[in-house]
Length: 217
Image 1 (cartoon, rainbow, N blue to C red):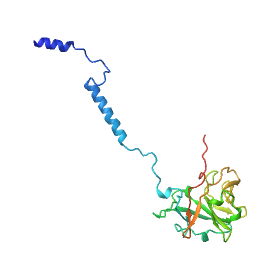
Image 2: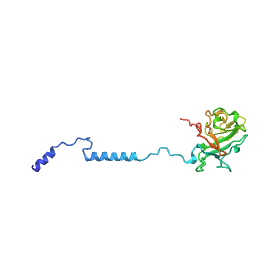
Image 3: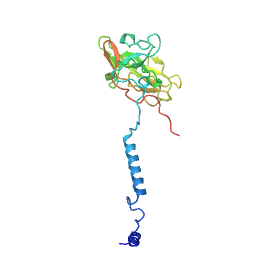
Image 4: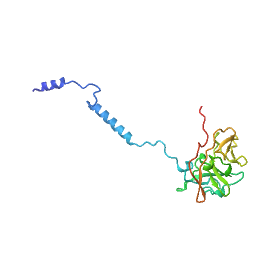
């Protein structure tokens, strides 16, 4: 066969139609590049929600309840240190393994008070530490008002209430933190407690939402 005939036969072959997939080198390279890119994307881990640093985390089950301020800051709270009368104890969770005090956020604050056990309602009593001999109970609540997030630093023993001096909301500590006065309409979050080795320990996560809900405009 002469060279002209071979050239003629090659010229007579139909060219591949556009979009025939892998029939051309350009299309083959494009698909391979796409496949490699997809493989790389699938192999790279995506971190959606990294854990907060320990000192910014809410009190965790098993944490020791520790003094949040003052000379005793970071030391475990014993039942005998919870005051009576018109005082409250400000505390925070402390990791018993690392020793980290979870005071890196204002929302982690806990107010601890002493009440007569007989006044605690059925929702509050299981989350409190009850001393059968003295007839007293110890309860802990979030220290942040649910109205606009002010700190609750006042305790009214006569009404068994935490009082917010920003807008005068009050929350009943004997009745599951329900609001009893002021603009607040949502109860305080309560922190379950237990007694271990003579110190107060966190028995579970906050029951209820901590802080206030921002309005949507």
